[in-house]
Image 1 (cartoon, rainbow, N blue to C red):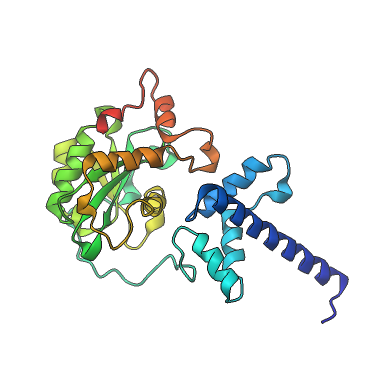
Image 2 (cartoon, rainbow, N blue to C red; image 1 turned 90 degrees about the vertical axis):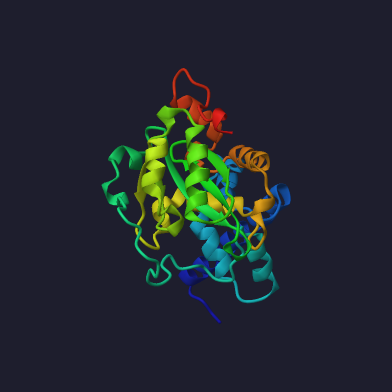
Length: 282
């Protein structure tokens, strides 16, 4: 097929960009191991070529280049390098909500603006990571300003366990760092009023099927699945083992804008005169 000069230039540029992305993927995978994130690849390119913008690539461009590959061994190998390894990109909405309503929910839409701005520490996002057959679970808390992660051992995946596990973990944190807790509409949070009474933390609920409203926690869950795989029994992990996993994750630089500071350091810098304020939450 004969191309005019403009189409040929676009074709050559597209191939060069595709090859650069593939090289970046393979290089990062060799250095950091499999299951890396496109966000980490984006940060790695910025750090490796700080003065060469032609080598920079956004995480969305990486996704697009991978999933635009024709079916075959190369596509399978590239997708296998991704953290989730889905054969296709997952949609943001996945049907109507079929869960019952939690009584007395306070919507995320009335959450104070300072929480959204991430300027003050002490505002958390939470979730359950569930094990095989939803019989076991681990509670996840992520501080919005610093991205600090805490994990809470749960006896099972019930509302009673969520109340006990999250109350214990939140009450082990210094009181100034217990301001708010944003959660999805999972039934395990049906006793949220008791959680607020026990900890003083205000609980806000996201809209149904809106994971981007808790984007920090959702991204963290994906990273945690490298340590706590789906389909396994999560009850075998002790609290000490969960703390070690959280420490490992907190040592990773996850956000481009703050990639020079680890979560514990960010939290310490956000609170003058304190260390992290969360070391007692272990």
